[in-house]
Image (tube, rainbow, N blue to C red):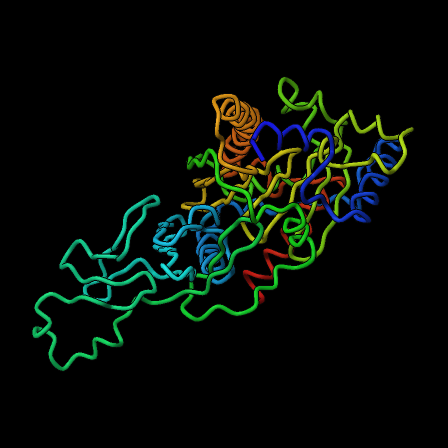
Length: 394
């Protein structure tokens, strides 16, 4: 199916892989009820988040350890779809290689030669039939097995059979590649109920478009805080996306450790008097998912945006992002369509990042011992409690 036809079908609500129907109808009903009541799903009372959580080097060290212990997104599945594909990930302070062998097997390794520890591959993606260390020429196949050692006699008495690349667990889910940056084989990956929604959208067959990496002067959790509420839309996004949405209104679900937000667009009112057979959520709402601890997936009518957040300092965050689109664009019109969507997304996200940087600039002043959150911002509290449990209890 051509790109333009795919986009047209999605706009008409004829999805190749729609959301599970019962869930879709339930979310639309809840959204319409909340619009009528001029509210969001809420729970609990106002609460505070200690400012120290955004400034502590001890907390940062624990967070970076956590990101090495949990499954995290390191690539898009389409980047390693073909045999011979190699992808490098280096945002967590741990160098990682992801490969696809000629037999179609997916692997992940520490990106470190077993001789003197040199990074074997640098940034980006490539195609190769083997991995060669640039320092002394040790070579490995794409399954990580050591294949070549120049002047092998220099290492008599060394068990070179034990010098394969160190393998990491690796999985694919909804068009994403996840790994855990601790050595060991892959096992069953249990992400929880909410992330299973993403599989139902057919993202496993989508491809990457518009990959980007940018660094901004804010604590990574400030970006997440802004992602888990809509209270800020009317003010922060007044010139960009706010006119398309309802003020401080949404459908919020929490299933530890993940969450889902449904942000209804004003066009959803068209469904009030329409039969439920014509109800489809993607043209009339944005759906935002978390993959704990550091990934945000924004599902839009004909694609998804994926962000992963990597703390490099208490006040610095690397944001790696990309779009999952139904197929590689095959025309200038399709490229223009995706670039336009990408720009709309980043126009709004940069507003969030700017607000986060403004918050970061005040934290060390002592003006606020904690940051205040209202009842409609309750997902921030749930996420932060889950993060604290993972950091300090588990």
